[in-house]
Image 1 (cartoon, rainbow, N blue to C red):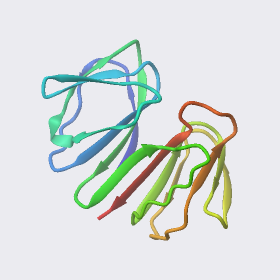
Image 2: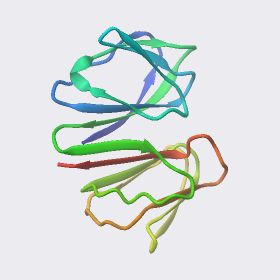
Image 3: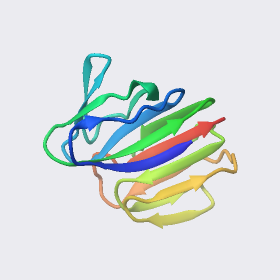
Length: 151
């Protein structure tokens, strides 16, 4: 499992990662248009992450200037990435779970609480199944993303 942020400042192709499943979300900026097998897929802030096979190596076109994105890449097993739903617990059964915050807020698993700044990655690889919650300081469009993988 690989989680990364990338700044995209120019049009160009993505790197190819054969055998890897990839989730891609825009964190800041106007977004991008990706060419996946001849079909243009626009990805902008606030949309669900786009899932695609890493071997695709799509061409990327900036919509209106630089963009920062969040990526989850997994090889084998089961993975997932989705936006944090406000006031809803996240209890998907993954061996490795993570939260990437888009804004400051408070994370809790019912027994532990952390105040987290924006653009923080909170990671747990213990496989514990307690429900997680993240409450942003404000009510933005996307507060963050849940990420998970089970090999």
